[in-house]
Structures are given as structure tokens and as C-alpha cells.
Length: 267
Image (cartoon, rainbow, N blue to C red; front, side):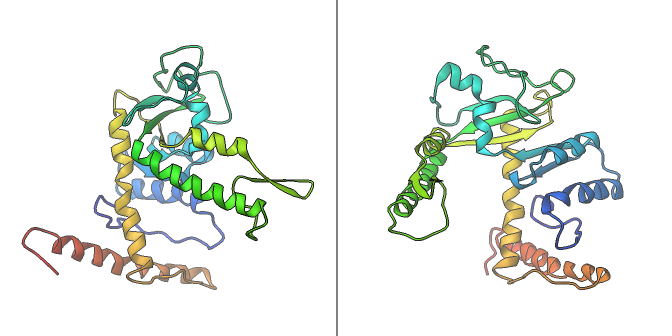
């Protein structure tokens, strides 16, 4: 989609194909069709897989994807070693993240964060982490709700499948205080992974580019709510193409909404 949420290309796949397995064929086909070089792919954490990032990089495509907060203890090991849990509102940390597991590219014994370079850090990607006090307050509220739910399940006050922060041992449920403490430690953090060097795009530009995703997300929300579009089951492969039909009404509504939002116009 473009910056206004208008789809530039649509593709359909079998229903048993995972979403993260569709990004490479869609992006490469789009780049080839329009002879695009230097393309930057922006995607959420759901698309974050080692194979996807490697294939995008091998295809000479740039990417910016959301990271999972569980990666923060590894990526920010140096920060936690030297500064503990202290973060300031708006703080941005430009560092590295291992492509797989752990590696020694980011040495916590060094106070300064390493600057990612493609040729020098072949086992890592560039990682940008940002701390927001507003996000921390929101995360804290969410974790408190999850903690209360876990305590209710442990106490037998609420019957439910084992929720987050509940561990089971020998049939007995207890509150996983260690996991809760780890989650509390990471409140307010949001990470981004990219293969774009700092000399080409600053950390703040990486964050800003990722946040443009809200346009795409708004389009999908519109298709599910205002247009009430739902998945279509196609028994034969050639029928899959008809699943494109709900996309164009969504695009038309998007264009209309933006036109009416211009100064001097109203619905």
C-alpha cells in the first residue's frame, strides 16, 4: 500500500499458507513488475522471522520490521549492565540484534553501543530501541490486568486456560513472579530491526517510517468493520482470484474519507 493506505498490488494465497510466508513473493513480484531498486519493506513483528529477513537482504531489499520486546534483554544487555533499568522519556538506543540466538557482536563489557555495519556484523542486524513514558504507563496497566487474572486463576476464583504468568508444577498452579518481574522491567520499550545503515537513515527516521504502518492497519480495520469483509473459502485454485474483490471498495472508501477530510469539506 502507499502512504495513504491505497493498495498498489494485491495477491492471494491458499488458506493454509502462513502470512509471514507470503511477504517475499509479494514484494519481489512487485519490485520486478515496476522495476524498483532500493525498495524498503516495512512490516510488523508478525513478519519477523530469520528466514524472511535473510531472504529480503539477499534480494537486495531494505527492511524495517517491528521487534518483539522479549528480544530487549539481549539487544540492550550493554545498557542494562551499565545503566540498570533506567530509561528517560524519548530515549533512543541504536545497537545490534543477533540474526539468530546470541553472538558476541555486542559486547556488554563496552559502555558504547556498537554501530551496525553490514560487512563487519554479518551475524547481526541493526536494532533501534525507543523508550516512552506513555507506553510504559500503558504497558503497566496491561500487565496489572494480566497479573490480577493470573492470581484469580491460581486462587481458583476464575476458571480459564492457563493465562500468562501462571506456571503449573505437579498439577498445582502458582504465580510466575520471575516472568512478571522480567516483563515489568521492559515496560515502555519498543524495538525495530533494519538492515539500513545509520549513515543512510537515522534511528528517528527508522521509527518514523515504521509508524507509517498505521495507514495500512486502518485500511484493514475498515474492511473488517465498515465493509464487514470476511475471509472467503475457495474450493478450487482458480477461484482464489475472486478474493481480491473486497479490496477495491476499501480503497474507494479510503479515498472518499481523505477527500472529505480536506479543509472546507464535510460529510
